[in-house]
Amino acid sequence: MIGTSGQVAYSIGVSSRDSDMTAPDFGNLFDKVKNATKQAGDQASKLARIAKLKANVLSLNSEKERHLKTIGIRAVILFSDENSTDGEELKNRVRDELAQIHRINERIQELNDQISEMQAGAPDVDVTDVTKDTNE
Image 1 (tube, rainbow, N blue to C red):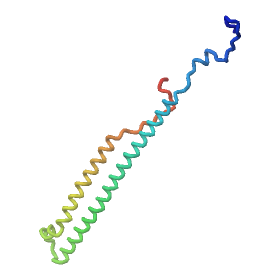
Image 2 (image 1 turned 90 degrees about the vertical axis):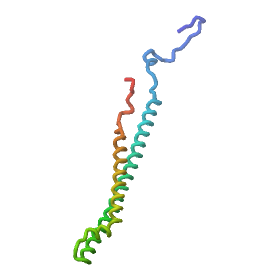
Image 3 (image 1 turned 135 degrees about the vertical axis):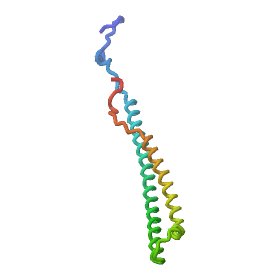
């Protein structure tokens, strides 16, 4: 091409077809990956808290089982000592264990409520293709 001043200008080989293409928006892709990673991390953290609460429930159930065994042992001892099952005497011997079992049952209910709330408030992880352009 010759300009008005007589100088020759050279084209750099860019056609109109090439100028319509835009560079991919990697920032958008990175934001999507970052958000997906954050979601996965939040979900993993929530699941870890739920697992810890469930482990506490198991521990409390084991403690409750020990108290129930103690009640059984005391009932057997009462029966073997007096050859009868005096209800009032048995209540007196197992009163502390019954109070502990009641306390444990209340705590287990609190933990189960917390677990239910966390699970109800936990949105499912949305697995989407982050490489897709949302403008398409």
